[in-house]
Length: 96
Image (cartoon, rainbow, N blue to C red; front, side):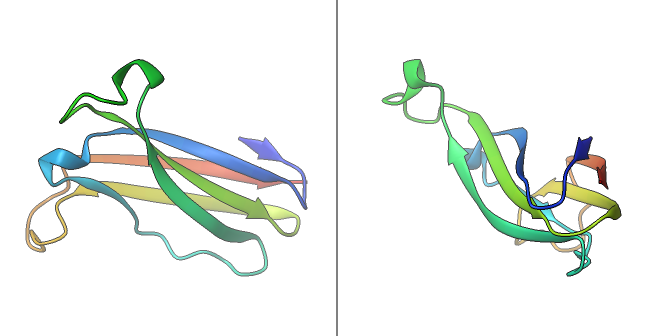
């Protein structure tokens, strides 16, 4: 993905925290390139009242300066330290 320095952007990953799984950012951020602004879980409006309904974890970042950064996320249960992640997602961010 391409962004401009100074812009905020989001990455949305399908998730269901009621299963115990959650997305973890496992790659360190270069403080000259990216800043993590936060993350939140969102359900579809039609599923707001459904117990156990899935949704998306939305990560918000701010691009700080020009360069290229790789982001790696693991979908795993935090207490299962020795287990392989159930899913992995990676993104390359190019900042102009």
